[in-house]
Image (cartoon, rainbow, N blue to C red; front, side, top):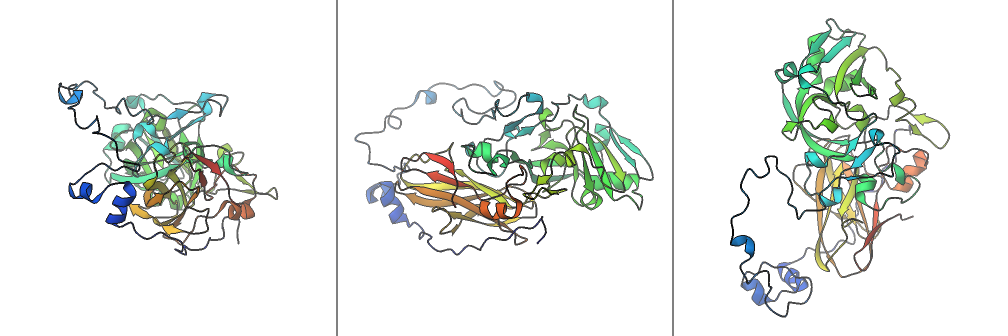
Length: 439
C-alpha cells in the first residue's frame, strides 16, 4: 500500500435501521390526534397540545395590516434581520494577523448544496489584492509557441464558457482534529469549505491558443496578492477540467475570492485554486515553491513527508444536529449533512446514531455532481436518549471515508492536512451536542 492509499472501511450493513415512519405513527409521535389530521392541521407539535388557541394564529398579525418596505430599500439583497445565525464568524484567536488568516463557512446554519457568496470561507496568505479590472492582465508564457496576455474583457469574450458547481476545501480543513476532538462546532471542524457554481473558460482553451511545447508537462499558477501564492499543477490536470473563472453563483467573484479572476482546480486542495490569477507558466517539471515544500506537505509518523497530495478524498459531516445546532424537540427530527469527494461523485452516505455500531443509508437530496457538495438527510425519532452521530461517505470510485483510527494507522498524527476521518457528535439527553471521539 502506498502512502497515498488508505484501507477502505466496511460497507454499510444496514442493520439496526428503524422502519419507515408511517403517517399514523408520525401523527401519534407528533402529538396530533386523528381529528386534527382529518382537519388538515399543519402545525407539528412534539409535546402536549397547548391549553388554548395559539396567540400567533388567531389574531391578525401587525405585518398583515400595514404596507411593507418597497422593492428598492436594499438594492443588494441581504438576509432577514431575524436570521441572526447566518453570519460568517471570524476566529480572532486562530492567527496572529488577519492578513494571513481564515474564516469559516457556518455549515450548521445552511441547507442545500450551494453556499451563498457572502458566507463562503476565506483563506488569505497576504491579505486581499485590490485589483482594478480595467488594469487586470493574465499571461500565458514559458514553454509555449506564443506567449499571450489577456484582459478581463478578453477572457469574457472567449468561446467555450461553462458553468460548473465544485467544492473548494482547504487542505487544512479538520486539521486541528488529528490528535483528538478539539473544536466544538462543525463550522470550526469542517467549515474551511464552500460549494458554488463557477462561470469561466477552461484553462485548456488558453493553453491551446498559446501552443504547449512537447516538453511542457507542468504549469505554474501565480496570484497577484502580496503573498505571491504559487503552485505547480500537472499538465494532465490543467488540460482536463481547470477553469479560469470570473464569476461565482452568477455574479462577479467577491474580492476575497480572487476578483476579478481566479483558477478553479476541481477536487484538489484549495491552495491550488490561485486567487487574483496573474500568470500561467508552462515548464517541464514542478517548481518546488514554498507552498509545496515547506507548506502543504503531510508529515508522517516516521519523519517522511507526503508531497503533491493534490486530491481531497471523500468526506462528510452531519451539520444538524451538531454543537451549534443542537436538538430542540423530541419526536420526529431531520438529520442533515453534506458529503463531497475530489475523486468523483458521492453515491451513498450512511449515518450511525450509535457511534458506528449500526448504519442506515441516508437520503441524498438534490443534485449529486462530480467534485461538488451533496446534501443528505435522515428522518428519525428522538425520545431523549443519548446519540453518537456519525456519517460515512462513499464515492463512485469505490472509495469509503475512513474512521479516524484507520486514517491515523496509515498517516500518524503529525500532519495538519487531508484529515477526512469520520466525525462523531455526542447528543446528550437534553439535546446539547458536543465534539467527541469513539475508539
